[in-house]
Length: 172
Image 1 (cartoon, one colour):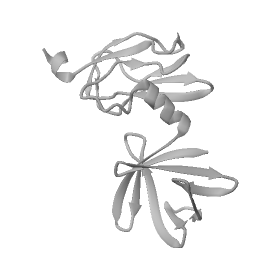
Image 2 (cartoon, rainbow, N blue to C red; image 1 turned 60 degrees about the vertical axis):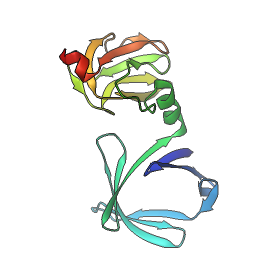
Image 3 (tube, rainbow, N blue to C red; image 1 turned 90 degrees about the horizontal axis):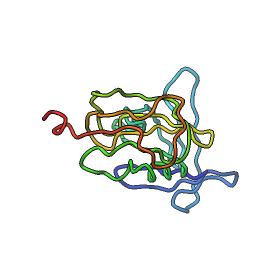
């Protein structure tokens, strides 16, 4: 399985398979061990040993507590990254974009209501496609102006699910 790991704006391709692990095509020796009842993990990477505590952050990424510091990371598999790319969540636009279905599927949950204020990266809707649940997130801060679908609705690729307006527009 291939994962894309982002650390400090650098993206690493991590392949995990029966032959072992590779980072950006280079084979690495890796082992992750944990003691029951403790959040501390022992990470062995090539010839180095690290103590790591991993916590989920609000945006769905990870905070790694390592060597007395905190490292923010994002880990996604190739399929999730493709869905993010199709949904435009990585575009980095200045304002919020409408939330659209990245592929045909079914609305599992709407996480907002009209008038709600959303923050960048906040979950807005969950769509099930190909037996996987995909959380669609706001690209920028904004206000929900219209929810076009309900839970249980079937949706088509590129169908608008939720409209968002920039905070400044919503205030005027």
